[in-house]
Amino acid sequence: MIVIVGAGPVGLVLALLLARQGVRSTVLDRQDAVYPLPRAVHLDDECARILQNAGVAAGFARISRPAAGLRLLDARHRPLAEFRRSQAVGVHGHPQAGLFDQPELEAVLREAVSASPLISLRLGTEVTGVDASGRVHCGTGVLEADAVVGCDGAGSVVRRALGARWRTLAGDQTWFVTDLLGEPPVRDQDFVEQICDPRRPATYLRVGERRLRWEFRLWPGETPGDLTARLGGLVDPWTHDGVGERQVLRTAAYTFRAVVADRWRRGRVLIAGDAAHLTPPFIGQGLGSGLRDAANLSWKLARVLRGQAGDDLLDTYQSERAPHATALIRLAALAGGLMASPAAPLAGIAGRSARLTGRILAGTGPPLRAGALTPPRRSRRTSLVGSLVPQFPTTETTMDEENHPRLDDLLGPGFALLTRGGPGPAGLRDLAARLGAVVLDTDAPELTRVHHWLIDNATDAALVRPDRVVVATAPARGAARNLGVMSV
Image (cartoon, rainbow, N blue to C red):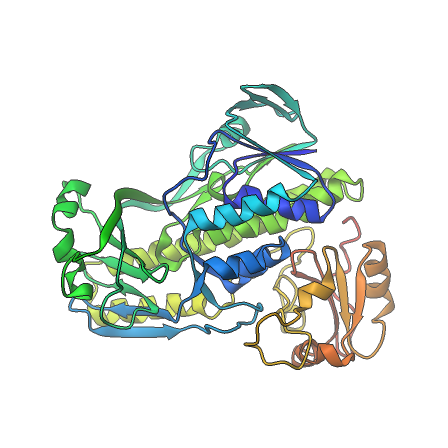
């Protein structure tokens, strides 16, 4: 059994992914109810795909609304740059940007958790300490666990038990955040808007049909009360009537941090999500990084607990995820800094922000670096290794039709070998068999798009991990690459 400390989105998704692997877990949280105030509001299509594999795609689609993309505006709200995102289906099989209310997402996840016989959710249970041996101390006694994962946020008890320290990547920023309920502003607001104004950087987005969020940079000497008193004037450029008849749901100050823990594991005690890294919100990747942690860690824990791999497989969790998370944190911190930089001309702000934002909005996050399962990306011939396989629909229906079958529905919860024109090279086929991989011949009519993806990448076969990362390939007319993964 695995004990997960923290019943936020990352902890709940981890439990659901472990259950899909047949692994039991107990999730502990000191709160009895869902935290009522929204924090995360955005997930991209890659992370919606993780929710799909956790079994909650329909629930997430029900509570989220696609966003049209991002606009960068100057201090007078004149456009500097615009990045459109597909509101239908992106490369990972879902709308490229989904906006949502975090309490609603947590309710969806708790409903799914309560329906799983492999997950026990224990609320109102505060964890006071964790031993390196996996003993979890809480108000009700001591729990013995095969592994412990701390998904318990920035003040993580589990991180302290690891003796981990924060590594700071950029300075803190304090922002004033307000949520209003009522009629949306007069101009088209299917876009997230970021105001590049050295005097008052700001962000606006419409989370739901009538739920509106603004964020404004707080400068030293200012208090949330100062901006609350001026709220009507702050939002007036969007609404043209100040707060008007809209209900102010909350106002709060948040300190955005850019930090990564220097240690993510000691034995079988690990951390994930905000317990391992904190991300400024400017590119919308905070919760997404935590969900990627859960996807990466869940299948590795399952293989270790089933005796299919040694504990050294868990070494690849931090070596793969930390550089990836760090790259996104640096991008977010730089984007936030450019919004408020007094030294840079607006044209420079727009240009640099455009390049940074474009990398995120392209739906192609940084690939995994070298680990036990992913070698260095030394050449174009191995460029697929470490990247995600796209999730194409498995019928000839158009990409924007609802309820179309997706590739992951065929891949299942384990490894998979995608081939074209046969069973694949012997070495790669033997490795796939040892890993219990399903084999899909993409010559099948329903896999036409996958077949063309292999052709476009000059690849005859690709071995895909449970988290959909390509782990080994057989280049066209070449020998299979990265077969040194036998230990998994």
